[in-house]
Image (cartoon, rainbow, N blue to C red; front, side, top):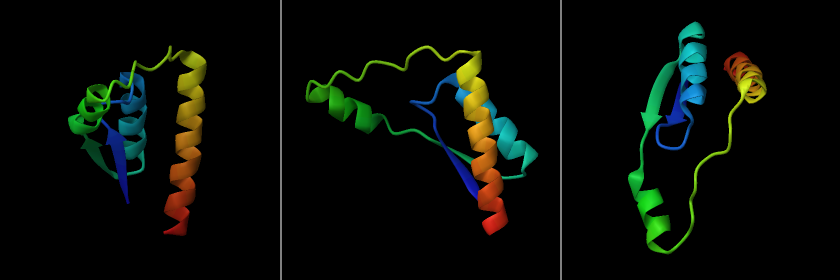
Length: 77
């Protein structure tokens, strides 16, 4: 199983959590970067902005959700 991470859009904290989870579960990790999507959106006038604040609570919720999802996926096979 591979864990794919959006290298452009994911906050640094999310990437760190994903790397720790993939290391602990011995998963391959793939960083995906696709600048063309953002450039295409901006070229049409879409305001892409950035992500909101990412506090301690959000990090914990994300880490717990990711752990549950990866554990279920590994059990399935």
